[in-house]
Image 1 (cartoon, helix red, strand yellow):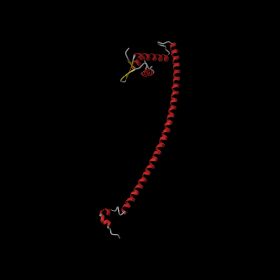
Image 2 (cartoon, helix red, strand yellow):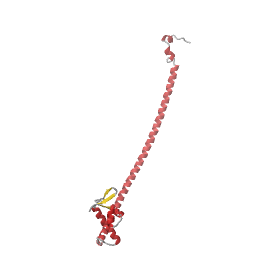
Image 3 (spheres, helix red, strand yellow):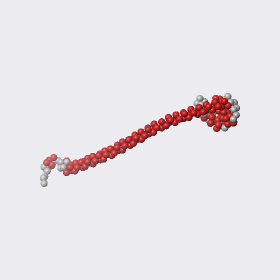
Image 4 (tube, one colour):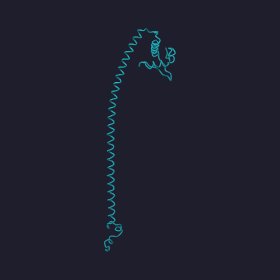
Length: 179
């Protein structure tokens, strides 16, 4: 039997395409469908499995047992109950694991928040130190500029450093008239 589309199988079984899609969502991992463009193709194994499931559902709804006997339905019901119990237990285990992971993540987030606060404090301290250093540098520059101004004032009042001193010759400076 060749691959068939969802619509073809739905028409064959007399159900909607949505009903077929619902059964395809519950396929075991060993089975898969093929999608080409927007069309989904079902291989023989998948279409046979869906046929069985649709037949079981329709026979339960209509009360007819078509190709299956009532004992098989009871066995399937027991299997489904044990399967649902296993699923419930698995769900509980998964939920427990997820809750533990959430607790671990919450602890990690709290630790990260503390680290961020510490980093913020360190950054504030570094900025304060930089500000103090800049103020100290400005004070030193001001002090240096004041000393430079005093030196230049001293040099202009000192006759040895005067510009006229350089222009005059040695003897004229030596024999300078005194007041």
